[in-house]
Amino acid sequence: MAMNEEEIRRERIRSLITPDVVVCKDCRERYKEEVSCSICGKNMLDPNYKGLVYECPVCGKLYCQDCWVKIEERKIH
Image 1: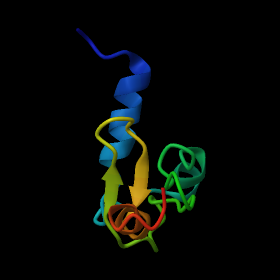
Image 2: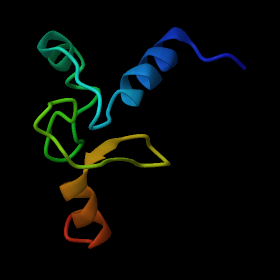
Image 3: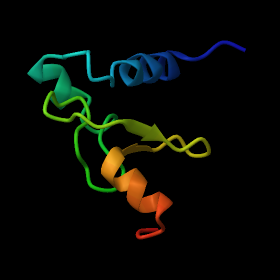
Image 4: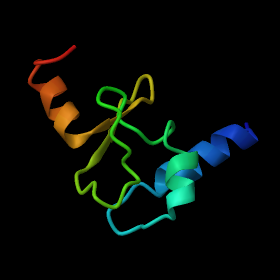
């Protein structure tokens, strides 16, 4: 079963969320909604973000390192 174009684009963008990849300001803004933490809204493509990126294996939502730690500690729901 082939992925549709939207899924391919989403996976490509998500693959860029690593500390060693820098993207231009226009792309950071364009894809902000897709690469921001689902809790705090932090844009994880921002070059100032140095933490890890976590993805829920069930729903696919993304979380910054700080929020993920809080989830694991059950401090937030």
